[in-house]
Image (cartoon, rainbow over all chains, first blue to last red):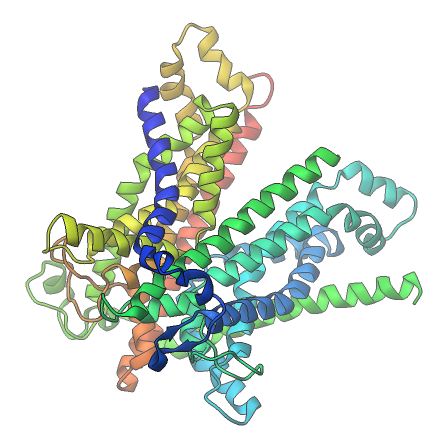
Amino acid sequence: MKPFFFISAVISACVSVCIVLFMIILGLPLFREGLFFSMLTSPWNPSNGVFGLYPMIIGTLGISSLALVFGFPLSLGTAALISGLAPKPLAAVLRKTVQAMTGIPTVVYGFIGVFLLVPLIRNLAGEGSGMCILSSALLLSVLISPTMILTFSDTFDQVPVKTRMAATALGATPVQTFLWVVLPASKKGLVTGLILGMGRAMGDTLIALMISGNAIAVPDSLFSPARTLTAHIALVIASDFDSPEFKTLFACGLVLYGFTALSTLAVRAIDTVFRSES
Amino acid sequence: MSRRWIERGFTVFAFAAAGILMAVTMVLTGYLVMKGWNSLGLELVFGTTRPMDALCLRRPVLDGLFPAVAGTFALVALSVSIALPLGIGTGIFMSEFASGALKRMFSLFYDILAGSPSIVVGLFGFSISIFLHRYVSGQLYPCLLISALSLAFLVLPYLIRSTQTALENLPPEVRLTALALGASPVQNLFYVLIPRSLPGILSGVVLSIGRCAEDTAVIMLTGVAASAGLPRSVFGNYEALPFHIYTVSSQYMDSAELATGYGASILLFGVTSSLFLFSFIIKNIATARTAVSGPGL
């Protein structure tokens, strides 16, 4: 039986490797012409034959960092309530609700965003279509919060009960225990949660595609539309196989794969560093 | 600022954060349910065709979600049946046989796969279809089979991890008893370890079904189409619920079509939430069982 299990493990590992190999092979013309790295920093200007990904990279980074800016405080506060600040029944309800939130499909978030959030933002901005980086960052922050909350509260819960009880025995209130004992011991989990949240935000396609406006330009305000790498892939795939736009797809894929592989490595590195410290 | 004020401020901040998040979630889901409630019903799925006629494929459904529901169903069935043996087999290997550098390397690969955005996995599926089109048969295009394969890759890491964790969390008594009584390692695996960790494995399977049903990015790149009708073969196009929601939001013609979008969103939301709840219940059974089988068993 062992060979069967071994072969499935090898196939599964191959899938992971093949994803990056296929993209490199299909993007090979770009590497051969030495275009890949210049693409990362040049603008998108098809009439001059320049197909740079710079606007999409900025769009992706802008929208997902903004989503983190909104999502991090929400997640930290909620996770603090779940792991210690709130009375037990409330904490249980909160945790269940957050777990259930992970089950909401992205496309449903996007759909509600188009008809509820976008008109609100349009009125707020007083101009434009309301499809902008602010709309998609706000919605993304709701999407990524459960990931961060669950990571944060798992880390908070890992602080030994003895330590917490010692603090309580010395007369610390729950909030004092949390702020001065639990939080300083949870740096690793906070960083891990942030990286996971960032990865989730960068990797999401549907919210950006549906409500960020998809204009190829470097956004200059919260209310300007932008296109992310993920949305770019989804939008260009419909075009002609031999067009130069088409080759940029694999560059987009590689950049995204690179970002996410790096964050996976970072999470693992943090894990090892902190484990060797303790 | 004194510590007391920081402490007070933080309490207020935590309650405000949770309050905002809960309120936003309520508003989002509440809005969806309010807007879409009226469109729910048999007509949403079957349109003006009689449900029995549609289910027996006697008559096509032209104005309902039936083709999309059928497509999603076929897609989930196909991708889970591809991913299941592979994922569980790998999970068993990782927990029972792998060790040292090999285990670390494989688990790094699976972690990277788990972190890959679904659009990247979709792009991979799309590249496979280009490859097949060029080198195997000019008749092959993105289709149901390619979508199912890509979705299988997407959920593979979840299956691996849930199987591995379920097996690794078995208490040592359970692990050793049958061996001590003279069972071979393979017998121990099939008669003791796998049955004992079944709830954990199953909850991972159920979560993967949910992932397959809701994912949109993968299928947009690998063969879903807006009005393909019922899936006829694994080499053809098909419709799917999440893609229907996306197309309605971007190009609805009238309020009736928009209503199907709300209806489809509630339907998909309902399906993923019930799968989620189901997996949660199975997982609770699993933990309860492990708790019972403490020392003394």
